[in-house]
Amino acid sequence: MPPRLTVSLLMSEGVQGAWVHCLDGRCRNYAYLTWRRMRVGPGDQMEDLVYRHKLRCSVCGGREVAIRPYWTRPPRP
Image 1 (cartoon, rainbow, N blue to C red):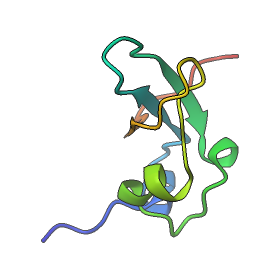
Image 2 (image 1 turned 45 degrees about the vertical axis):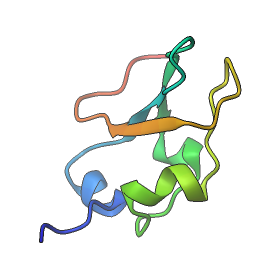
Image 3 (image 1 turned 60 degrees about the vertical axis):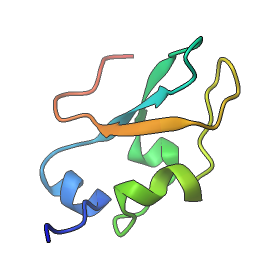
């Protein structure tokens, strides 16, 4: 069984945040969020972030979201 994907593992690889995608078929909004903005700790696991941190879409308010690590540099503000 592969190791669980944790925030600390991603941070050690240089990943500074994640894309959060709305799964609503009509909305499909997405946003880049840093780990700090999501208020996650190094021991948090990627699978649990959606449920424990109660993420929701900023456009439609939907709670069905997916989180994908952003493996390259974050976008400039």
